[in-house]
Amino acid sequence: MPLHSVGRALARISSIRGPRPGPTVAGGDSRAAVLEFIEAAEDVVRVEEIAEAVGLHANTVRGHLDALLAAGRITRIADQRATRGRPHWLYSATASASIRELARALDEELDRASAPEVARLAAATWAEAGPDVLRADTIDSAVDRATQALTDFGFEAVRNPVGDEITLRSCPYAELVNEHPVICDIHAELLGEVLARTTQPVTLASLDVFPRPGLCVAHLRRPDADPEWTVELADRTSRERVARTKPAPEAEPAPPAPDAGAQTSTRTTNTPEVPDPTPSRRKK
Image (tube, rainbow, N blue to C red; front, side, top):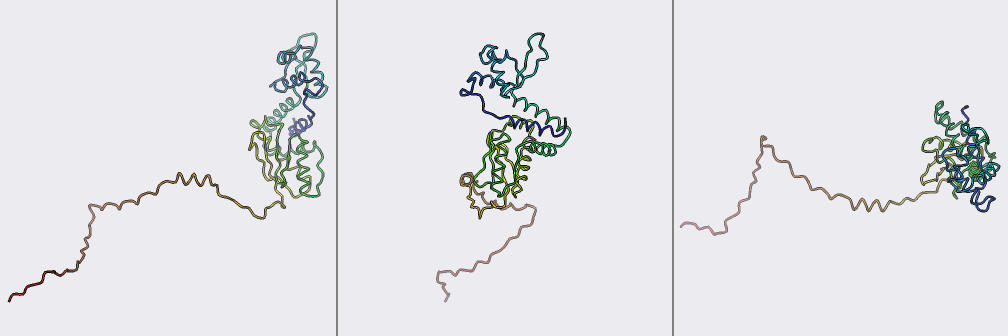
């Protein structure tokens, strides 16, 4: 498998779009339940497993599966263990299958190349297969285009009013982060590549991964967003805590005891003589 297979797998996942089946979509709750079960499954599933899980007849399930196949929401492969007669199929969600493919590709490529190289090549391939990012006239429009590109790549991306942060939610690859943290490096390289294509002087400074569950924050470096000055307040809670837990001042140490074997010096103080108040008597 070539080194850029990770990028191709990422591009396929990004292209899987469309509304989730629900009560307002043809098929209603039953079809949504079928898809939900397939998406939650850790491996491919058979018709009988789906029917038992959602409480529907197998023939009814097959009708929903045909509709989901036509919509591109699931895939199927032939069960090699099946006997003669009607073919038996194994079903999986399209996104889930692509995620598993991506995990395998990451494992294979990380065996042959370093994580930074995999991240760089995968991001370049992914960006090339994704939507076009046109040159921008201003830095703000560059940030807007990068935000839209991240949305097209499958994230829920929102920029802040200053335009120096992009918040990412609903990451399609969150389940891979623990075992394959390089996926976050790929995302950072992708954003850097997208920003570079705008030809504006804005770059990625850092990417905070999950400061809150399911949320990442990209911090951008742009020359026109430096504040005039910054006012910083001391942490009052910490200051009060320190005051409450501040130890009592230690007593001054007692002078060391004199060494018994050492010579001691005695200083004599001359006390002025006090005259006797009793009148003196002279002998006649």
